[in-house]
Amino acid sequence: MPTSIREAVQKSCRHFMVPIARFLLKNGVSYREFAEISKLAFVQVASDEYGIRGRPTNMSRVAAMTGLTRKEVRKIRTKLRRQDWSLHADLSKPGAVLSHWYTDPAFSNKQGKPRLLAATGSGRSRTFADLVRIAGGDLPPGAMLKELERAGCVVEERPGVLRAVKREFAPRGTNPFVVERFGECVHDLAETMSHNMTQPTDGDRRFEFRAWSDQVDPIHLPKLKRLIARRGRGLLQAVDDWLAAHKAPATIRETSTRSGVGIYYFEGPSKA
Picture 1 (cartoon, rainbow, N blue to C red):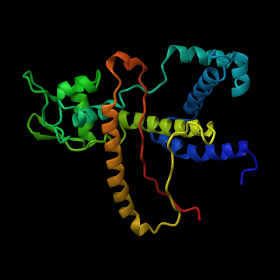
Picture 2 (picture 1 turned 45 degrees about the vertical axis):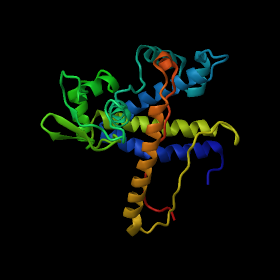
Picture 3 (picture 1 turned 30 degrees about the vertical axis):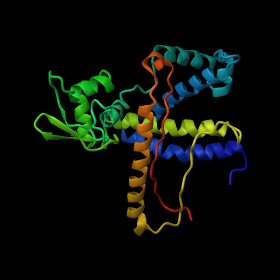
Picture 4 (picture 1 turned 90 degrees about the vertical axis):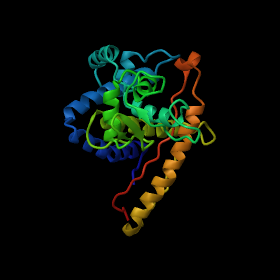
């Protein structure tokens, strides 16, 4: 057992870094590149979250907290100012397109079933191109369709007519959407757990619980996967409906909040 909080943090870091290292190596990112990215993250957090009265943390304190030299901190701060290192909305756009298709009355029927959509067109009927223009931002309809088809979310009912068959966007294989989705999902879970660690027991804690056992008979795992897929999908669809019904008016969209919930299944060797 760790003898101090510091040792516990180091052990925890090593543990969660294993899948991160697997992800990086699989996608051709070396340790040296990762180390440079880590510097950016350390300087960004130390600069943004440890200042006095809302001001950025001074350079000397950032250097002391991160173990970097003041020269390195200055160089990294300049790099952070020049470039936006956050994940952009391209990742969530396929999910937003599917959500609109299932919840917007212009693209779904009264039973909440997505309508068949022509890929393109100039008539009064809504098309897939219209849907992408409304929910997909600046992504071209062709690129959006390719990603949704790759994820098994959309099929061509007949030439030029599209049907939505899956509501959740969960792409497979290695492509930019999968890579960014990895980063966004890990970020969201880590943000929730980090937030909860700073809150008192009766504070503003975010929902985060697990149900697990290290004594499951492997023969029953397929049943567990089906159970979680069925009930988890039902919950996520209910949340998606709620989110669609409570969007901020366009007049205050700039001050709206990003929120939601994620459900994931895990398995691995028993520690027993």
